[in-house]
Length: 195
Image 1: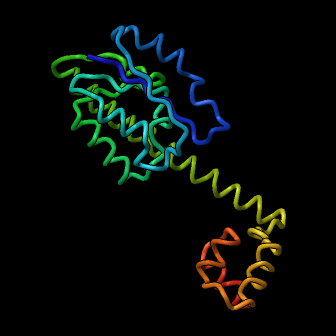
Image 2: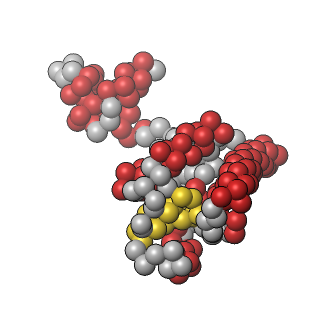
């Protein structure tokens, strides 16, 4: 059995390794053998490179250790159901450091009841993480709207646009050759010449 530690942050500006040393210490109570899976990827995405690698590496009976449910998922309910099924199919046991009921395994009726309670708590926490993410995005949109901010998009590169017009006017190059000479896509050439 191995403990597979998964840590995640949404952006490279955030410290995904922030909780890693605590989780490594915590994992020693289960086994001395552990593997780290660290990534900077949104929890709203089902397919994440490090999580996929973890699931591919995992063997039945291994422990998937996370700091909190929101580090594992901010997925929609449908996508979270898919992720839970992948975890179950691999025979992994999910241990959430900040959810003490997941820390022990009990046998018999008590164990069955505890598994049901843990499943419900994990589902609830995953739903709350998704809702928290949705609310945060909505508040940002509202704040931007109230501030009068209007995104202007990417400004045209007039130097390249002028060069496209100049090269095209010589009538000795294809649109593809103009695009390559200027360092833009062919669609940009057509868009500039259409104006």
